[in-house]
Image 1 (tube, one colour):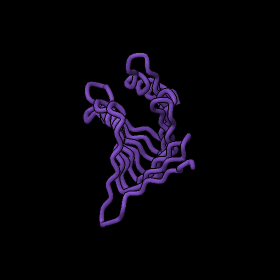
Image 2: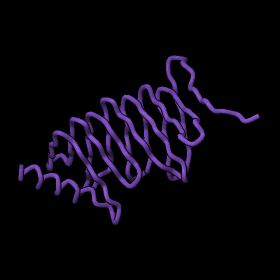
Image 3: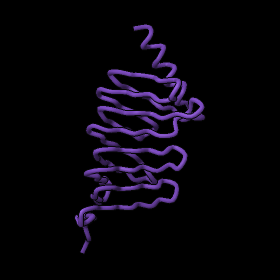
Image 4: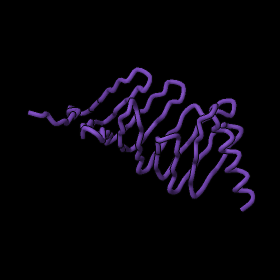
Length: 152
């Protein structure tokens, strides 16, 4: 139990980015210092400010003990805030690139803007937080889908 607590505290220290606090919870945690990866499994939850990521598996890739990429799989769901708007989403795989501040949702990708009920679905959705852009891609001639309400 003490060992798990020490590992967890080390993990939190690894993710300290300035004043931004990141909380990570999981049933199982594996750290590979040589390859600079952490693998968390079982009811994984990551909180950073108002953003929340849930999945059954999360692999965190690091460089110089700082996270550079998060890949969540197995029932990946998230809640993120951008410009006073809240988004809920899900997909088969969720990738967050720290340096680019981009989210990529792969496979059964879906994002809903909570306030307006706007909905994006496709095989892949890329959200660029820095540039406030969204890209929806579909394969096999399936259409990307955008749903919104119009007030008349």
